[in-house]
Image (cartoon, rainbow, N blue to C red; front, top):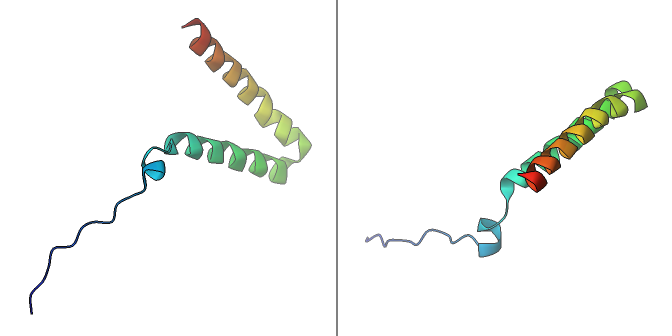
Length: 66
Protein backbone atom coordinates (compact mmCIF):
# COMPACT_ATOMS: atom_id res chain seq x y z
CA UNK A 1 0.00 0.00 0.00
CA UNK A 2 1.46 3.35 -1.02
CA UNK A 3 0.62 6.76 0.33
CA UNK A 4 0.32 9.71 -2.00
CA UNK A 5 1.06 13.27 -0.99
CA UNK A 6 -2.08 15.33 -0.65
CA UNK A 7 -2.44 18.99 -1.33
CA UNK A 8 -3.52 21.13 1.63
CA UNK A 9 -6.96 22.63 1.22
CA UNK A 10 -6.78 26.02 -0.43
CA UNK A 11 -8.58 28.83 1.37
CA UNK A 12 -10.69 30.95 -0.98
CA UNK A 13 -9.13 34.34 -1.66
CA UNK A 14 -12.07 36.27 -0.22
CA UNK A 15 -11.47 34.58 3.16
CA UNK A 16 -7.71 35.24 3.07
CA UNK A 17 -8.27 38.94 2.35
CA UNK A 18 -10.91 39.43 5.04
CA UNK A 19 -9.98 41.95 7.79
CA UNK A 20 -10.54 39.51 10.67
CA UNK A 21 -9.20 41.93 13.30
CA UNK A 22 -11.83 44.50 12.39
CA UNK A 23 -14.59 41.88 12.51
CA UNK A 24 -13.37 40.75 15.93
CA UNK A 25 -13.43 44.33 17.20
CA UNK A 26 -16.97 44.86 15.88
CA UNK A 27 -18.11 41.64 17.57
CA UNK A 28 -16.46 42.73 20.84
CA UNK A 29 -18.20 46.12 20.77
CA UNK A 30 -21.60 44.54 20.06
CA UNK A 31 -21.11 41.98 22.83
CA UNK A 32 -20.10 44.75 25.25
CA UNK A 33 -23.19 46.80 24.39
CA UNK A 34 -25.51 43.82 24.78
CA UNK A 35 -23.91 42.91 28.12
CA UNK A 36 -24.27 46.50 29.36
CA UNK A 37 -27.94 46.64 28.39
CA UNK A 38 -28.73 43.23 29.90
CA UNK A 39 -26.97 43.92 33.20
CA UNK A 40 -27.67 47.63 33.76
CA UNK A 41 -30.45 48.55 31.32
CA UNK A 42 -30.52 51.86 29.46
CA UNK A 43 -28.17 53.64 31.92
CA UNK A 44 -25.62 50.91 31.23
CA UNK A 45 -25.90 51.54 27.51
CA UNK A 46 -25.28 55.25 28.05
CA UNK A 47 -22.41 54.46 30.42
CA UNK A 48 -20.71 52.36 27.73
CA UNK A 49 -21.61 54.36 24.63
CA UNK A 50 -20.53 57.84 25.76
CA UNK A 51 -16.85 56.87 26.31
CA UNK A 52 -16.97 54.70 23.16
CA UNK A 53 -18.26 57.62 21.08
CA UNK A 54 -15.63 59.96 22.50
CA UNK A 55 -12.91 57.38 21.81
CA UNK A 56 -14.09 56.95 18.22
CA UNK A 57 -14.08 60.71 17.75
CA UNK A 58 -10.54 60.92 19.09
CA UNK A 59 -9.43 58.07 16.82
CA UNK A 60 -11.05 59.77 13.85
CA UNK A 61 -9.19 62.99 14.67
CA UNK A 62 -5.90 61.06 14.75
CA UNK A 63 -6.68 59.51 11.37
CA UNK A 64 -7.78 62.75 9.72
CA UNK A 65 -5.23 65.15 11.19
CA UNK A 66 -2.31 62.71 11.44
